[in-house]
Amino acid sequence: MTRTKFLVTLTFVVVILILCILFIINFISHPNPITTPSGNMSDDTRVLDETKIMNVMYTADYEFFKGVTFEQPHDVLLTEKGTILVAGGAANCLYEFDMDGNLLETIGKTGNGMCEFNFPTALCELNGSIYVADNNNNRIQVLTSISYDYRDQFAYELDMFGDGSNIVSIVSDGVDTIYVSGNYFFTGDAVFSKYSVDQSDSAYGERQNIAPLCGALTYNYAADILYLVDTYELQASQGSYRRTQGTHYLSYYDPETNDIETVFEFPAKYMPSEVFKTDDGFIALSLTRETIDRFNESGQYIDTIYYAEEYKGMTYAAMADDGTLFVSCPYEGMVLRLTPTESVSDAETES
Image (tube, rainbow, N blue to C red):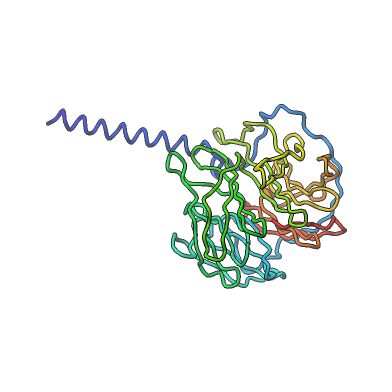
């Protein structure tokens, strides 16, 4: 009897130790706000882009959004009805503002039911529906775009360890397809995939995985082109980010062939979080440089048009037709408006 109790106790201790080791590995193996508070690119041996052309074109308004204390806000969506929708992140809700920054409505609450959220991140709109990456509930939730009532949901599959997804970006083609980018919490495997949408009966086709990608997606509706941005080619290692693949590309996707073609490679140590197509090139937000920069069509750096002196970590953004940017800084708990002080170039897309 004593020997049996000993074996049971030993087995229990071994199991607990294994679980603790797996938890520690999981915790330090991907970025999180505790062990990875900021970027450290010291292992990147490529030559740093030393260009320092400054041409500041934005005025920042840090108090534009009123009536909310943000908790890790994520994606920003300019809706078709003329409002601004912000994924509340750690607040487990969505916020709707008018174009003057006044809070109109708080949408949803904490939970896993209809119109309930557990860390919403990415947003997009298609044919009268708002698609919400309900991250920690491992699903994409679909709401009506007028009243934000629950319409539907579809699961985002678990990885081989049964762990959840980290959906970074969602966009639509404006017709019948939703594109999703993200990775898995435990394995870190990145994936770029798409769903077909039949709005007539709210049916969603099976997810089709296309390529490894964890980064921003931007649809240029004027040219009918989906741009892909390699953002998170990093892993966390004992409290600091370390580059594992070394390159960040801007690419475009051909839905007819499922091919991805590279447009250009970003400069060394440049980690793009959002990219917008303009008449004369591209505007990109950089997480590592804390800047907004302009590039020509071939990827040549033109100048820096904004430097984030106060609020860092510009991660998500939406651009209005007049060039105004609405930018979220999740770990600063801030969403700010950047107003052009002169013509930046008419944007042809919103993220």
